[in-house]
Image (cartoon, rainbow, N blue to C red; front, side, top):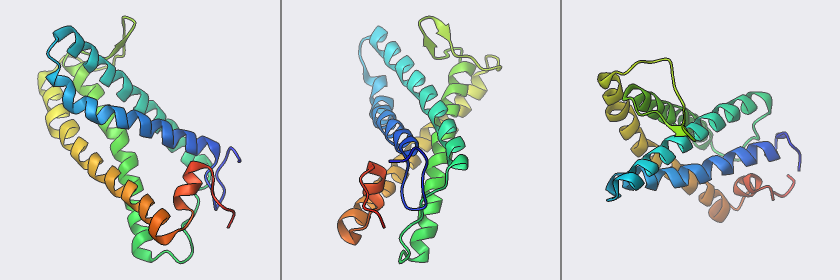
Length: 184
């Protein structure tokens, strides 16, 4: 397997980004919904900080992934794929990329504006913004929380499309993100 993508397959770097981000998001979604229900205050605080730190990791990985996407060609869909599916694929991927950048960024902005930045071993991850409850509230209530629902829907569409290609169309779309595609 090549490091870079080809016109028919994903390279090891794109595959690594995809699955690392998938694993982190798979942890983040349930953690984000249930961490407020943790009865022990100290554990709840640790869960919130862990959520924030993982969000920063997702943000960094997504920025690296976008940079890599500009550097390495995107494999095409099979020739017989209808136009509506091609357009849908582009739209869903764009919205996933945008959402997975805006989501952690809004969480980070909200946390810093609320005076509760993520920290690792006592070192705060800061932004050049001051305490501002209005900014914190807007970042959480108007961006972060609604975007969570949108991302869940987009992720479900993405997974269902991959399963459709694998089990119904029986093409290599899913296998090539697993690094085990047949050569076209």
